[in-house]
Image (cartoon, rainbow, N blue to C red):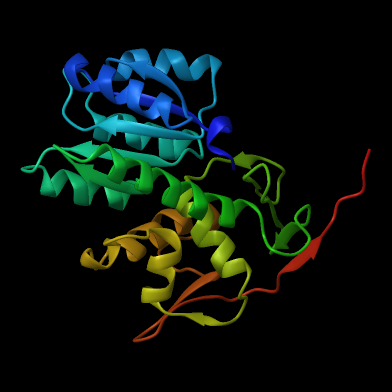
Length: 244
């Protein structure tokens, strides 16, 4: 994905940070839309589909954690948190609910650009498998369209998944019936420094199970391998749907 094609939504109530940062990112080739609140961001998202959201945690009214939860539950949008030094617990919560990364204020803008590109690379890897890019996954009656990031249940209902849940599911689908250890899954799903949060993968697996298992407390599809990690216990078929 070329930088000039990347659409960013920058959500921060501090104009003194938001406006200079938007200018800097624009000079780096990104198309930036600004929002001074979660309410404004929700309004913007009604008419646009950015490639990535830069989201401040502490804002008047609805905070960034709440907006992030909405984004990961309703849309597959990568999220990078902009956080203050004292918000360590909020960062952990953000990663656990599906945020992709964070930077701590004050930060070097070049570092943020590197984070953006890293997250977009991970998202691109997840949405564009190396082989048969148009191929869909079918597993236990479920369908996943990787290019559209659309998950459909056996009854044909579309089930929203976050970008982190999507990458986790693709990792499991690409290795059916194989044990995937937590470290490998963590690197594929969360990336930088996520290993510091022992339960990051476990929380993402729990969220995914609630969406694809008949009973998430007695999972049949995504099984826990004690001391090893997780395994997708069903067969997976990849196919290219017929046009028309």
